[in-house]
Amino acid sequence: MKFGEVGLEEAVGGILAHKLYDDAGKLVFNKGHVITEADLARLRELDRSRITVTQLSGADLHEDAAAARIGAVVAGNNVSMRAPGVGRANLTAAERGVLHINVPTLELINNIYDGITIATLREYSLVNAGEMVALVKVVPFGVPAARVVDVERIAEAGASVLQVRTLLAKRVALIVSGTEATRGRLLKSFHEPVRRRIEGWGSQLLEPTYTAHRSEAIAEAIQAHAGADLILVASISAIIDREDIVPSALSRAGGSITLHGVPVDPGTLLMMGYLDDVPVVGAPGCVKSPKTNVIDWILPRLLTGERLTRANLVSMGHGGLLKDIAERPMPRSKTHQPHPPAPSRHLYGAHPTHRGGGGSDTES
Picture 1 (spheres, rainbow, N blue to C red):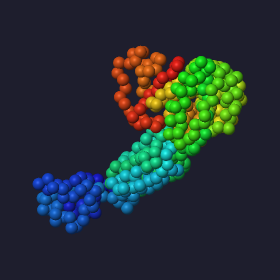
Picture 2 (picture 1 turned 90 degrees about the vertical axis):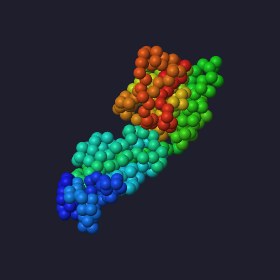
Picture 3 (picture 1 turned 30 degrees about the vertical axis):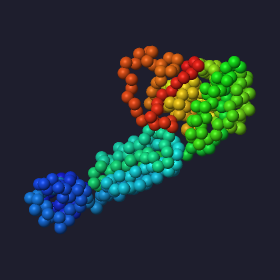
Picture 4 (picture 1 turned 30 degrees about the horizontal axis):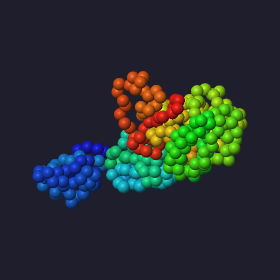
């Protein structure tokens, strides 16, 4: 492939690099136009003796063909590809679900050759059907065919580069623990926000169970809901330690703790564990807030059937500082935050204009 300024006779078959206007400012040829013998007379009329073109060789692929091949090989399950031209391939979600990206393979592909680029949403974004999840853009008018073959081989060896794991219709149990005097208040404060989230993700929230805030009582409630697909435990008091009441209840019920203390704020006090294959989440107080918090990062992934490991949860620290809200018992503003962060695109939850969490009887 050659790029540069050439004489008119040499330009035939070349791809015009830039838009070409006449002296009146009228567009004569758009960039990307392939120069033909018939165009030479018009170029001479414009007093052009040299123009800048890209000349592809037999070893090169045109940008459109390259983009289409790359888009096809990186699109995995539930990802659709459309190549509209101008060196682009648009990748969209075919179903509502959670976007999974093989990040090391994506980085290898982006490092193959100048001008072969793939830009994606953040990994684990919750996406809607038809939403664009990635863009393949071939920047020059052509690239060596061998480099596209390299991309194809790397993508094939790395399994799916991009896939959307569909949200499944799950049965979710909610256990609320507290004192008898706080029954009505706690059920009211937890039930509705949790129901909106769960139903918004296409699953069913079972009738909440209220129990005493004691490990043996919560353990019995967990065992009673062993047939659910996911169990949430929301309590009058935050989980402060792995030996606290809710983690102890999960252990007593025969389950195991994956992690207590997830590096996402609001929501650091969340506990994640399992009763056999059933996820059990000790929810922090910010589950009561409609704004995005740790629950919006974790539950959609669980509702796709993914089993979250300690490593999965720990990796959420990168990007885990979400927008705060003033209603929390100890908002960050009280610990001095002179310059609030600029708003950014919501990644995991259901409301693209909302980030943050909040509102707990104790901490979140």
